[in-house]
Amino acid sequence: MKYSYISHLYCPKCENTYDTKEQHQLCTCGSPLLVDYHWDELMKDVNPKDFSTRENTLWRYHELLPVEDERYVVSLGEGMTPLVAMPTLGKDMDVKYLYMKDEGLVPTGTFKARGAAVGISKAKEIGVEELAMPTNGNAGAAWALYAARAGIKSTIVMPIDAPVITRNEVALSGAKLYLVNGLISDAGKIVAKAVKDHNLYDASTLKEPYRIEGKKTMGLEIAEQMGWEMPDVILYPTGGGVGLIGIYKALKELKYLGWVKGKLPRLVAVQATGCAPIVKAWEEKKYESEFWPNSRTLAFGINVPKALGDFLVLDAIYKTEGCAIAIDDQSMIDEQAKIARLEGAFICPEGASTFVAIRRLREKGWIKEGETVVALNTGAGIKYPDTVKVNVPMLGKEDVI
Ligand SMILES: *Cc1c(COP(=O)(O)O)cnc(C)c1O
Ligand SMILES: [Zn+2]
Image (cartoon, rainbow, N blue to C red):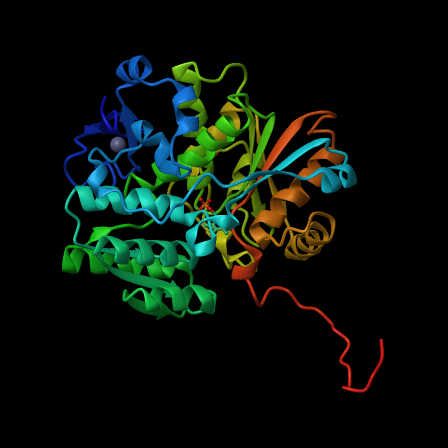
C-alpha cells in the first residue's frame, strides 16, 4: 500500500506529460497541468469504505492526493467540513433537499486552505524553498500561513482594496507582502516578473498543478457525506474556477473508480454581475472567456476578470449539462441576511450568491421539484466584517426597552 498513487502530470490541451518529482509550472504550450494517478492499482488496493475510519481531514483521501511521503504533509486539520441541511431556507425557495457545504470552518476561514495545504505540502516534497503569488486576499492568507508552517518563504502581492483582515493574516505570517494600486491581474504581472528575476516557485492560481488536488477534496467529501451518491446539482461561486474544476475532477475520478454511479451532478458556476466572464462565455456558447474590463464586486473572492483555467470551467459546465449565472451584489447581501435569519448561518457574500442562484434557477424551472441541491459556502461571514451594514438603536443608560 502506497501513501499516494500519483503517476504523472499531463496537459489537458496538448497532452504533453511531465514527471512529478521535479518542479513544473505551466505546460510549454501555456496550459495549466493536471495530476493523474495509477487508477488500476488504486482500485485494487483501496475500498471507499475505508475512509470513514480515518482522520477527519482531507488527508483521509491521501491515495488520491499528490503527496507521496506522509512526512511532508503540512496540515492544520483542514477538510471534512459539515454538509448542513437547510430545510427552512429550502422551503422558502421551494427546494426540498437543500444542503450547504460549509467551508467557513476550514483554517483561515475559507476553502482556500485546502489548496494551500496540498499545494504547500507538495511544494515541500519537491524542494521548494521560496514561492510567490498574487491574491485577492483569501488565497494569499492561506498560502502565507501554510508556507510559514512548512518553513517555506513567501512573497505575496495583493490589490490595495483587498480586505484588511487578509492583509493582516499575510503580514503576521512573516511573508513579504506588497500592495498594488490595481487588480489581481496587475499583481499577477508583478509576480510573474519577480518569479523570473529571483527564480521563485510561482504559486499563482493554476500555475502550479497541485492546489486543484486540494480543492478536489470538496467533491470527494460531498460524495462520501451523501453515502457515495451524487446530488443533482452543485453550485459554486466561481472566480479563478479552481474549486469547480477540482470538484469536476473529483467526480470524474470517483466515477472512473466505480465508487459512485449514475449521472454526474449538473455543475453551476455562479459569478457577480460586476465580473462575469464565464457567464458571458457560456451564454455565447464559447469555450474560452474574454477579459472583463473594470470588474467590480464586493464578493472579492470571485473578482477575477480572466481565469487561466476558464476553458476547464466551461468544459465542466458543458459536460455536466450545467449552467452559469450572474448575481448582483445587493441580492447577495439580502440573501446573506436571510440565511442568517432562517438558518442561523453567517456566510460570506460569495456563498450567498450560490443561494440566490438556486432561487432564480428554481423559479425558471431549471432546478426541478424534488432535486437534491448542494451549494458551496466558500468562506465564513466573519471574514467580511465590513460588508454588513446594520442600523442598531442606541440606548442611554437609563432608557427602557
Ligand atoms: C477564491 C474564492 C472563491 C472563488 O474560488 P475559485 O476556485 O478561484 O473559483 C469563492 N469564494 C471565496 C470566499 C474565495 O475566497
Ligand atoms: Zn500543453
